[in-house]
Image 1 (cartoon, rainbow, N blue to C red):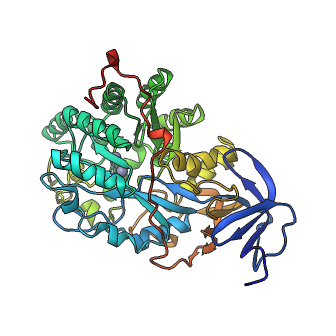
Image 2 (image 1 turned 135 degrees about the vertical axis):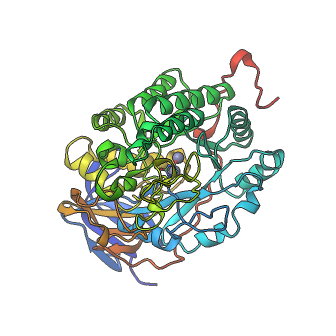
Image 3 (image 1 turned 90 degrees about the vertical axis):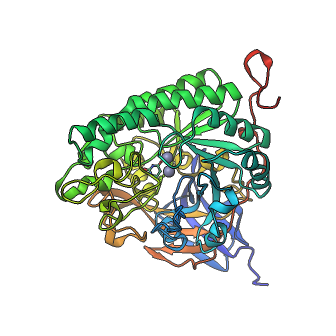
Length: 494
Ligand code: DUC
Ligand code: ZN
Ligand code: ZN
């Protein structure tokens, strides 16, 4: 018995929640917030938050960490490095992906993945990727997965080894509905991309910028429309991942007006980067190759507008790191590519063979805080919703994204006046570059507390490997169908 009511008191900060901003102390006991108030009694430990803004710990619900390739290779970003980067950037929980490879069961596709995740320093959960919806997967493995607390499925409508056709997408949506699972969707039209790639390569156009030319906004808009229409047909709630442009966001807004349960996510790269970043000397544009592709400059503000009108209500990182010195310039088969390994005369990959993805788990929140709060585009409660509270609701992470008594004591102390220039050398991820190199930000996470323990202080990650917890997710209302199907005939349950 310590004789104190609290293990830790975070004293005198300006608290920002999804609902309000107020001055209060936070009392923490056994990793949980147990009191909010003015002049709380002393705790066994005290942290002064004077001059800081205190938010809930960030939740990054879309990250690719230590993914296992079909050839047994493992992605560069490990659970140890990825979670250190998360904590350094103010993120205390993340969701990453269990893979499935075509021709394999779920179990056979992810050998040891859940065991590897135990090395995490931050709390974590999983989305299950479905690439091969066989009867065994849909009827046996998905129910078992949901029973284990993995309650969201991820599907791709593009990428050679990953994509589903419409019939398969319908099967996955119906299976999710039967099992009370949520579905997230990567929306791009595979055949349209393949057709444009062939034509670009035939014309001898191979630079990284051609990645964007191969998949213009209409390709994303069409797939977004189709995915929503099929989800509406099944009556299955879905989230559209990484919306990059107004055209796709407009499809989501239109469906929401009809009452369809569809949500939209975007990422910092679609708020700050553009075609300009796909160009540059020495193949530098490869660093910005991700999908959907970066858009023309004016699109950034249109995506911001869709954040402001609530259509895009989560900003995730889609952290998917491939180092520039090695992976981004290597000609090889990547799960995140279309059209096979094609090389250029300089030995580098043609645009379509550059692995798709950018690292961003650590920079997500500083960039969002700076571009959003510091520049006056959004208020603090909106920042909290975009960075944690909405993800906690959409993916059912009770106790996360909140400062209410009873919530996990996951906190970030932001210095709103700190001015920094992002440099890869100071980041904790395993990747050799950041797309935000040289990017100036105002506002910086100086202390991260995970379940009552200081996990990062002034850039030093203190949380040890293996201290993160798996977050099992139970049934919840947002994932429930609306009960609206054409003609009253529910084909999913027939
Ligand atoms: N997009 C990326 O850029 N990388 C990984 C997967 C994705 O959909
Ligand atoms: Zn995706
Ligand atoms: Zn992704």
